Image 1 (tube, rainbow, N blue to C red):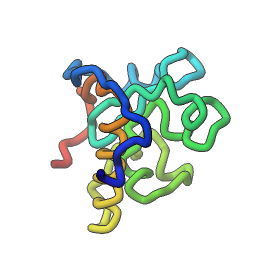
Image 2 (image 1 turned 90 degrees about the vertical axis):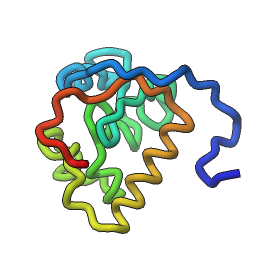
Image 3 (image 1 turned 90 degrees about the horizontal axis):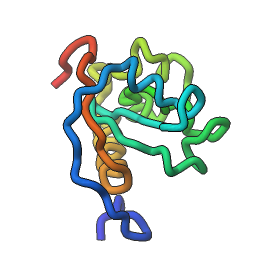
Image 4 (image 1 turned 180 degrees about the vertical axis):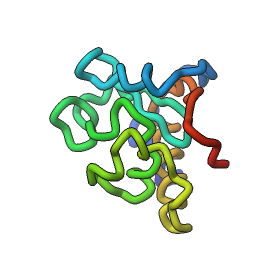
Length: 126
């Protein structure tokens, strides 16, 4: 069993490939709307059902409503890493940080439904 496998099995829906804008994702911040979405490397995950971790006032709420790739790769909760103007840009991550980011992507993909992809990232990173 992989270290990324959930302790209890999670039944996930087939991944969706809907085009979502950063503005649409920002609306799903758990405050303006009940939905809570986090994008990683342009893939949008629905974390709405995990209010214990991502709900308003919780430790990881800072990632909700944006592509949080930079902050996740850096294991950072710093305002400069979660700022939506740059939070999607993981091009500056070093090799260790990229591994961390990829590990987060794997972790999320085993627990949360993929509901789409970010259609309007400012620049292509891959």
